[in-house]
Image (tube, rainbow, N blue to C red; front, side, top):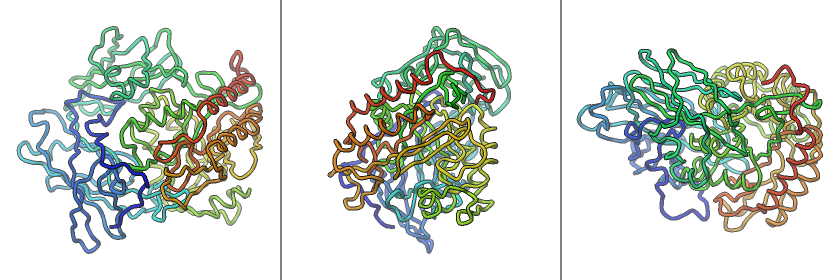
Length: 614
């Protein structure tokens, strides 16, 4: 083992910011049905098989992070052994007991009371299993999770690298999230798939066990939560109270129902309206919420544009890597997500491109309730080569069939990518905030882009699909997605697809005292002060972005929300202590940009509606 690199101004002590936090904020049963597994001991299984005890490890943080209490990474050939012992928290329960484990990087074997109960490969998606038969009614239950992580590039791995630096970040391993037990009835609701429209919502129920009549209680008037309400347990007291007075009641047999909402109020960044609902099926009861919104591609005054709720919209966004100085892949508390969201909203941004990383459920929950649009990347796997995937394309060599750029993918790599991508699409399906997906980023791990696009879009045709973000375009995609660094912005739409600038900018500005490691700063254009950065951003948006809005550019994603380790091109420092850009200037710019776009494509709404709406 070896110590990981650390942030120079890491806080003293380890906060318990996730202790007691409900792990699935958007799909809740009564609190007494949830038992968090928070008391874990960590050991290292050495290459020769010896076992070295490390000590207590604090979930949800990976062992490499300071907040885990460990701050170490594995050497080649070593692996982690997590162990926890507990009394059965549901000794009188007559139904089923489910074990929920977070993303566990990359391969693990789980044993309960000495018996293997599952094996899992991946590192990106959470997973669950029924452990009813393995739970002891008396005496301690011992749960062990043995984890291997050699950073196998056939498995999705994103921005992790054993040789971190520049645009590559500290790799994580082990469990990255909350582990918990859940008591459910013999027949229970496993999932609800929410498909919103402008006036209706369709609820599809996946259940385990014998069929039963369902009752849905739902609001006829929406809820909009303030930041203050969200900062207090995510607004759970408001959204998930037991009081159902004033709710409409709908009973149905089968696994789906469509509900018509009278006088609907649409979800948007300006009005993040959500409707509470409760589903009762036999002895099971689940609480959640839905929103009414529609995302579509339409032709407006001769330009392909992305529309929200039928109206053309300019999506003013930032690239969001989702890394934090103390928890690495998680903030110290769920409120860390809310702080980031509120910071970018105060600067006038309304969209986050979640970059090559699946986030904790709390992120999407808070984006739903704040009206923050998310464009979600799938997580890359496969081999990355700088000259092929970045250098030559940046210089203009962007044809996927150019001989030196040809790449090969293995059947194993393709299988893991598709399993992960479909899992992400399933996991996020019911979140109103998720309005689009990126399949392949800059050719990294890319294979059969048209076939993969068709497969994933068939699974979820309600969202925008960016098949190839940056370059190496295939024939099929919902958008034309461009990356521009190191040169002036001068894009033109090719054909009728919406023009999306999915990465640009990346201006670097170092703030002393808030650097990960001095002397290793990385960025795309260097500004010497925060004032200089603000002025450069104002010129970039006014002189280069604004003219392209008149030409149909409808999405811009500036790089990026925050610094990440050596990469110092964030609008916030890595520790989130300093906002480098002037908030009032950025907010004023956002108003100016939207006014130009709306004057060009707003007014009475949509003309020349294309028959191929998403």
